[in-house]
Length: 101
Image (cartoon, rainbow, N blue to C red; front, side):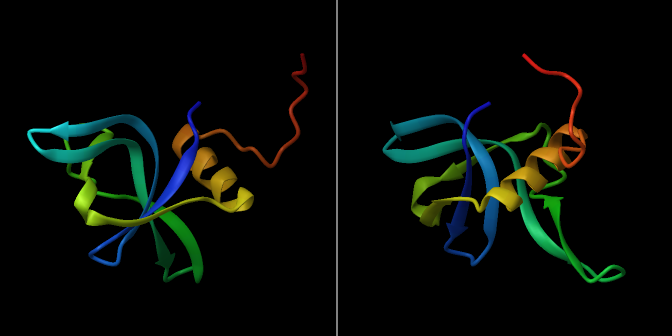
């Protein structure tokens, strides 16, 4: 799987996702195609942070972000990356697996 990043947008949103493709200078616009983008939100019932789909009404789980909308990019803290991967895959990564190579 590709690396997971945190994108800080000019709107103030922080979007988590993996870069599927970088399109440089497509029609004079730099863009990133991001897989399964999510934002962090507060669950008011549990008072815990959780991931929510970013643009949940989009046709598929790949979203193009215009490069000029991004003001910062960073790798995630390991525990946040693990939580993101668990949420998008549905696999509980906190339970040790009996599968080994």
